Image: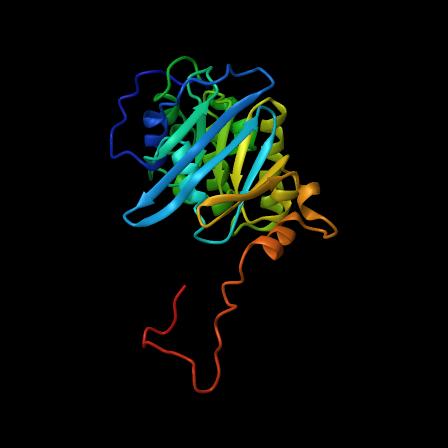
Length: 279
């Protein structure tokens, strides 16, 4: 199916819909050239007195995968939202030009309109773009061609991620930003999603992941360790893993402080505030 322009579907925007409308990149390199599709210089973001991102700079070439790793609360999701144009920030973000959209974005917990089918959902998002958009190709790309008539509320967590990735690829953007695309998924679905990502990259797009998954990190061309809002170190998985079997484990062991190091819980010093626990 090819989406028809000018759909009259209405309703409150989801986060994904705003990503279609609000991304307004700085002029960058032309898409399709083997070169940088993303250039980030000095990106910063604060919430009041809290600096969430501090002078973040990185670049990513077409046909490559980058992984942003780091402890919980290090700013990974905030960084991806800033790069997608969904969060105000200091510094500059340059995205490759070309096609109906410069960047596709998958949030950590994608939300879709209820009572829509998978096909109707993608048609709705396609109608937000200019030019012809091939919805069938997007479904084929993620392995959901047989689920076009399924209601979004009937999808499993993994299928929702796949639909979110399909939505992010509409218009063939040269850059995809995927926030924790495999978190809480079983090994088979995780492997499938990484296979989908490899297929997208083989077509020439670049993919930047925020992830805690060893498999995603090891399949990346470049890994960026984000801690306390800034890039601590970056390199290929081989450069970063050293003598270990895992680049992710090596990075955390060498650069990330143990959050429990200052906690001493014994018979007399355990603290209970009456809340029963927390996260």
